[in-house]
Image (tube, rainbow, N blue to C red):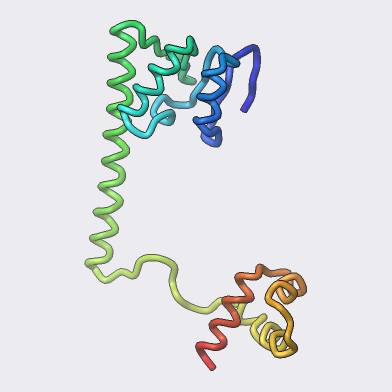
Amino acid sequence: MNKTKGCLIANFATVPKKVLALAQSRQIDAILVTELSRWGRSTLDLLNTLRELENWKVSVIAMNGMAFDLSSPYGRMLATLLSGIAEFERDLISERVKSGLAVAKARGKRLGRQAGVRPKSDRLLPKVVAMRAEGRSYRWIARELGISKNTVADIVQRHRANA
């Protein structure tokens, strides 16, 4: 978050609740967003947020230069139209992805991570098993070998399943 002369530049990582809190406390005058559609999950959510910001006298400006003035009928119509189109586009993308996954599944394609060899884990298996036999903890083994505790647990679990 950057604050310059009462203007807040919000990016994808900015938490909207924090930005709204700054707006409500009158610490900012404007919010710059990459796209208006990124500011709300749905048309209704976006319009409610824009109305709150308007009540707090905070402007919302899209990076393409559009400022949304909800006090005018034109501004409300434009914000509603743009957010509605963005919501429609998100729904279409979601529908296409789900449809594509269903088609792939119907054709017998296995989805998700492919089961198979894990070279690093397989290479470390004898060392991990030996250290566990010595009574070492998962955390100690992980630190010693430079891997995560979860990887150690996974190696031990796969070894037990194959033993």
